Length: 276
Image (cartoon, rainbow, N blue to C red; front, side, top):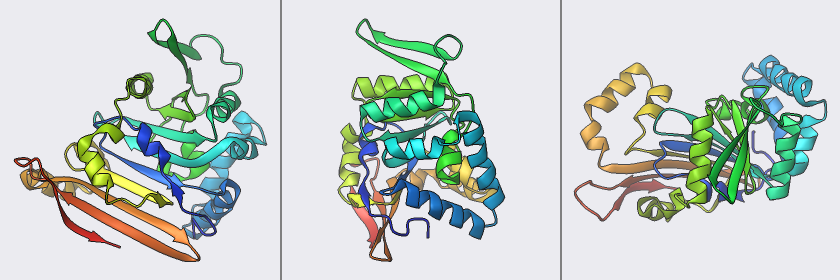
């Protein structure tokens, strides 16, 4: 229901994610306005319509009655929540271009031109970015739904065609620094091999790194399951990661689940199982 009428799109944001992450969840949205209508229906079906209406109302109260339409005008095709190994979280909203990303930033931080609302992050004499403190927390979750809810989104910055939200100022600067230096997941040879089995286009894509996801798993697993994970951590260390995707097409949902076996004592990796 959530992606009814949507077309599968390419997950370009994965190319910008820093190396060493614990995992991510990505939503591919070809039609922003249709997604908003589907999200409202979904939240009603799960008994959370009042919560959703309150979230949208908070956005409109803080940023203006037209904020949802204005974001739609500048939105690209994807939004991603990324879990970092230190337990912090970032959320990336894709703009149609760098110009549209800056337009979205202006909608959210208009008037914040001085400290403490704005801080300069300087990489060198020619490269600097402004990071803003958000006047309203969890803006991505309010706009895109609970799948982006782990990120408090207290700080925001525009870089390339992305709007990058973070729990802390430090995690935003981490993302910016790694992107400028091209320390990205797409250049990780292990993920590069892993991605050979990933569908290029989808509407939902979640990835968990089993080599460094303890902080992430501790948030999403029950206490019994996380205890089991700790008890069998040596065995889990032989797996690189787990991915799950699904794509909407012609009224059907197609899914791809992939778990990659990669023994630590071997440089070569093999597929344990894969479903389509």
